[in-house]
Length: 186
Image 1 (spheres, one colour):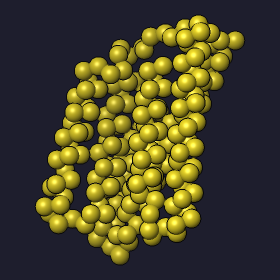
Image 2: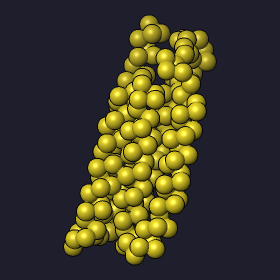
Image 3: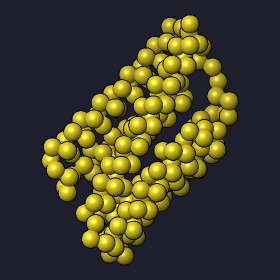
């Protein structure tokens, strides 16, 4: 169940990445469709989370323990603490350096992705490297794009694509977790 909590959190942030950044230069209809798809993907992860919770609550499957210790232990708190400091400390620094505002999402994607990469060995979950490496790379791409005529596309590349990665990964891994629970219940 702890893993599903992590996937739910990832899906929420993925939906926010898409909802906030699916703007111009994308056509309005495309932005709207991306937002709708993001909400549907989040609803799917919520559905899986609730279904798994019911299965555990009714005793259909045992809750079981987490092999690597508590998911939200000391290492997690340190990593998230560093993430918060980097996010809220980095944005004002970027502003003070005169970096265009569109690049803020590149910084956010970079830091969020790096935090997933750092959590992968702590949680003994190599599958987290995909939703970690992709936003990190997309964040770096946004920084590179900031110095080009493609600046207006930074929110799409660093924000929307990072959101799609987080949502897609959360949805697929949630589905796999539910399938595993159903096999255990059979």
